[in-house]
Length: 151
Image 1 (cartoon, helix red, strand yellow):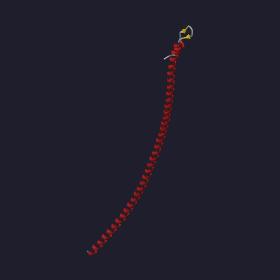
Image 2: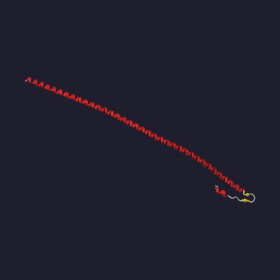
Image 3: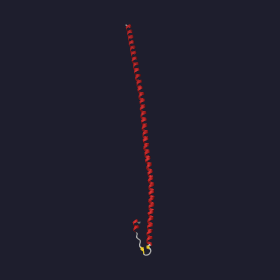
């Protein structure tokens, strides 16, 4: 492959009458033409490759941007899901606390009612016991009276 220095340093032998040797000049021009055609093809191929690489780069930039947007959307969605789950969990806990408190209140009311009922029954039993005791005493007195009369 010729270099620019080769072209610059190329010397043609001179013919006495017509100047440079026509054959040498034609051969050199042919060689330059072939080399120039190669360089032109290489330049076209390099340009084509650069364009392909640019297109690929744009494609990958688009993919990267899409991935970044998808990642941001996924992070945002994850945050939303997390917040909704936390809200639902808080709601469930609050409902459970409320329900439990209602049950505790209900049971405390029942305990108070049962204690009152027990107290009432104990009072009735004490009254019954006192009446029975009184009845037994009166019956004992009556038996004593009968026994005195029999003597």
